Amino acid sequence: MQQGPNSIFPKSILEGSRRSEEDSQCRAGWDGLERRKDVLSLAQEVYDRLDRQDHLMLKFHDDFLVHLAETKQTKDLVNELLELYKGSKFLVTVFKFFVPIVAAGAALILWIRDHVK
Image (tube, rainbow, N blue to C red; front, top):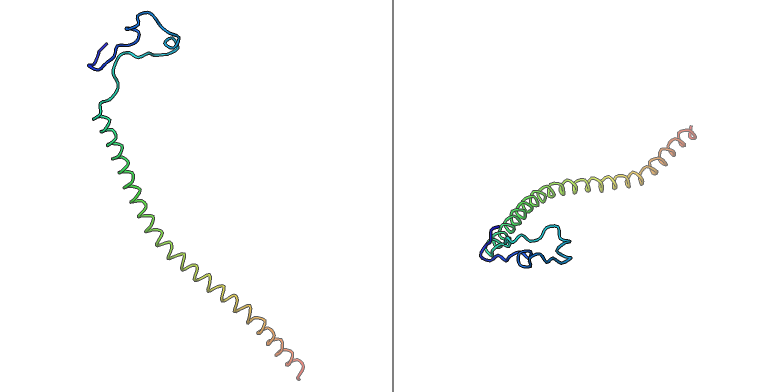
């Protein structure tokens, strides 16, 4: 068993054969090895996580710019479709107005042709 300069002896060595109920319920007790990291390694781990987050944010930013460019193209196409739709609605309105007038005129012409002979 290796002991570091900051290690604490395991409970079982200090207490001898005395064990409480908590110790008997534990599957694996402390083996006496110091596993805590020093401050520099913790700071390096935080820096590594921040670097990964920065990388993900840059990737997200690039994907977002591509999405915006595609959205601008799609927006132009959708606006063109809306203009066509509005134009078609106008044509339908015009036909709804003029078809009865033309039909009445044609019926009048046919009536005059049949009755004025």
